[in-house]
Length: 298
Image (cartoon, rainbow, N blue to C red; front, top):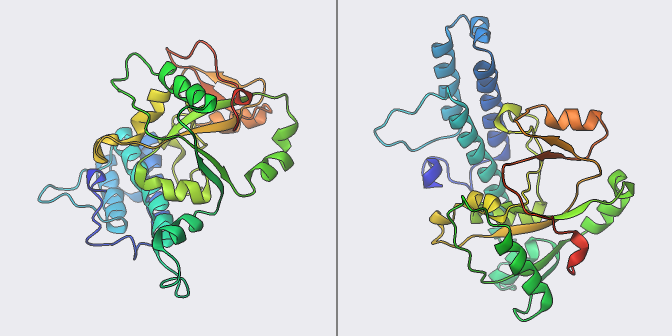
């Protein structure tokens, strides 16, 4: 977490509680209100600069950072706010990882640590694909063919795993969206390696109510991409010796989708009010055709 400036020496992950992370989200939400409307500062009998510094200090007092001799930056820009949101989301997933790594008393000596940690993920299936299989070839080709020309990445596929979380198919089948006109797509999701224990054990999650909506381009939701390199950039492979973990998710998008070409913090609420399941943020470049989820055995 050093690249995100988190001070694990002051507050180790083992002592960090989710209640503390939630308080951090709330502090950023208060800051987001100030950034969206500087006039709110008057409510606190402060000018805008003093108010943002005050609430930045509150945030740093909740979530310790390691800036060395440098003064902590005042969070006055949306870019800084978004970076701190990324830190809190990573801490949330890493907290799940610490719980998985921690042995239960009865298992400490009886079960191999790797077996215990894998079981703690609670997966229905995690099967490595044969590199000579048609499924492996189809997915590898999809990865390479959805690489954006402006993304400076060089993919090398090491392993592909077929993964299913327990109960996920049943929850999908019982959901209201399962009866809509089918528009299932295989879409990418990238995240830091340190986040994957939380993702695999708990699933992809929407930001909590305490998080500021302005920190997300299209509001709170699960973000997926049709360009593999777009998602790969979120993996931050430079901190893990060039190795990244990338998810290819089966997603039901609904038909039609809400299509936008500019950011909208209210996109989620707007889509729901129109009966849409998803928002499509249309970029300048995209694949010639999306891969339907029925094309491979997933």
